[in-house]
Length: 281
Image 1 (tube, rainbow, N blue to C red):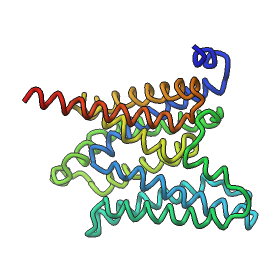
Image 2 (spheres, one colour):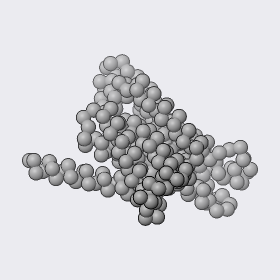
Image 3 (cartoon, one colour):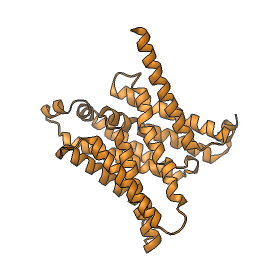
Image 4 (spheres, rainbow, N blue to C red):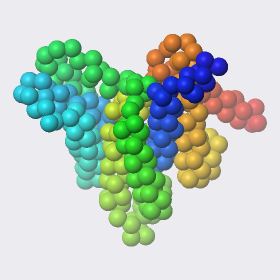
């Protein structure tokens, strides 16, 4: 009841709930494609490479006085560069996607930590990008994520057939004359865009959780990709709302609580379905 009272009387709780709903839509659509392509690791790689861009940008602001530069610009540049690098190496090189993503992940984190360590002053704001603070979102953040949702839903609907074929059967897509390279890079760029916007709102760790865990749960109960998207978006909204309610009542960090709820739900569904199948056999 305390949570519902706060939701009615406090704007910051209303903003947090709304941003959770909007984030769920974006992560449901993008996450479904990422999981179908079996590159769930990519969310972590792009997210942590964004930390490198944030660290470099903040260093330039503090040390060289580049006050016109926003750390979000650094995150955007690093995330897009990481996405295109992963795509190019995967398509043109001989390396597996997971190997490239692991390298990008490590390099991004290392660059971020190095520049953060060399930046004078207390860098609490930078650490906020890791874990986020959904209770501190502004109306500007809400509009930004709303635009992100519109872009993602529009592209997801417009290119649904192409993304679907490229994710599930790349060779078949080539025989149908579909430009696999273009749509694969477009998917990676869309993932990077989602990560960039949501990292500034809910943090790196929560973005990874929302892109992967609700989709993994939804995949157990859906037969088609669009069903997975809808169900994953709904699960993200439920998980985020529960995270807000539980963290408010128990005075826990909201991001960590939400991730824990999503993780426990995924494990319960996974073990439950495995137990059900074993009994059926």
